[in-house]
Length: 414
Image (cartoon, rainbow, N blue to C red; front, side, top):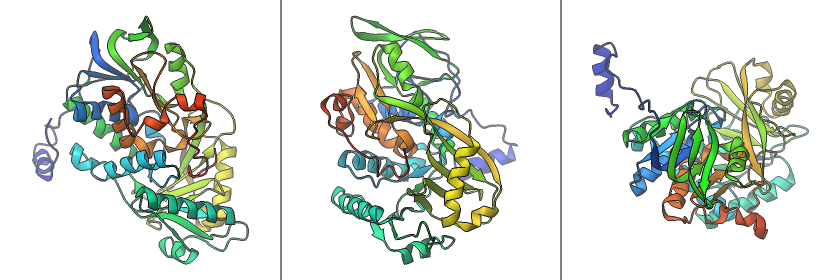
């Protein structure tokens, strides 16, 4: 794989850009792999990458029924933070945030990580107490956050109206080293690195059956034929229940749409990320100048990847009181992603009842920010059978009643 650099750009400019290689190889499935990962989104690709980087396991196939990064990885609002309440959550999200900081250097590929800071607004007294509690918990966990007052909120985000009659801003939980990254670039960077290690990334290859013998996985049947494997990783977000049923077990999750939109591009006016749980909305400004706006999940189970007027209207109406200027903007486009939500709003990274089959799902609205940490922990779990990062996120917690409740710290309504 050729390295990207300023010299390479200059060289190719002289050659009319005729010498660039494909970012990753176009592969056809082989008969057998040590590991097959189903799902070529951020979490699946990250799992494959850290299997190779950390454990030297490179006889890996990542198979995807659509196109690489075409699911939730390409349909989110790119927020990165780690200020979660519970210790297991803070650990895996902080691992992810710290890995994001050096991801571009690791890949030799710019993922456009922007540590612009993330604030979660407290607009009720209940939220003030909740976020102060989270700030104290983060201090004990080694996660750098603090609770700030309305004056500092206004200084950090001048376009905000902090004296709204219904939703006054009473403060915010502020994580200065949080931010955003380019979602497509994260997937492409992982894919390029995996391909360089010799892994096969196979697109337009849908799994139709999970094959097993005597309670142990033996491979998968796909639209491109049978593929044998020693270990199988299922990392398919909102379709996790479908794949789990093929493997012969059920998951305690539900799939719902999460919608978002972007406005027409405008001049820079907001250089932080703002999340407002009370009004179920969050907003940042992209490098292109668009205002990126998201809200809560749909109130009913569905598999749609389209937006809907009633949900977008609800989100924008609530945000306009806190950000009056956005009332004058036109919407450029909207979309939906299929998120998988557990009862305790925490993910599942676990062995399954089928031996040598592993599952990574249940990230709800927080999947993008966790990609590097999720991949790191999942790779360790698959390679060694145990990972400190994933130990508390097993399926057995639902049987034991050992929940990791993040319904508040998730930051938006579920």
